[in-house]
Image (cartoon, rainbow, N blue to C red; front, side, top):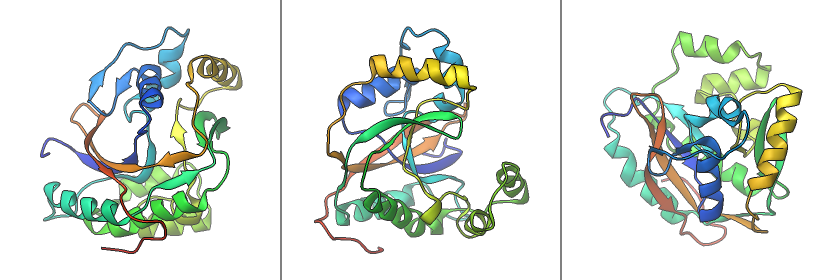
Length: 232
């Protein structure tokens, strides 16, 4: 794992049909770290260019560099323990929506459980995160942050955690209105049926390769009983 520049903890779909759709839509299979044939959709490559490098995922703990003295291998044991103690999270389902200029799948109902899980991930593994440097802080602030988001950025290295978190599976980069409409119609044509309820049954450790693309290192099944939680 020494070849990875940064690490992150993602949700990668367990549902094979949805995962395969996401890989084909983006043209990148994050689970296996390989290019895949993209769907034959006009302008698709341009629509997904920025999202492609990350793969089809929902962020739980955003990309981070390891703190001095930490090793990537040291993440594996704590992640396995964490997942073993946490129960799967049921969402009411997923729906296609526009979020700030990009297209994503978001929960249709019941977000408390996934919000709590995501913040548990952020807090539990923050000891492995190297604090953001001045350049990164400046880059994050360039998009315009609220006072609350800036406080979260300073504490956790990312402004969209805790009460600012919104679970989403990203499908495009930021697009103008016309391109968003085109992308929406294309996704609707190819998107497989999504189960209701939709279960979040695993989390995954991913790494950023030297070419800037992310790939899965290990998936961990959530094996705890309902109501289980707490740090490790």
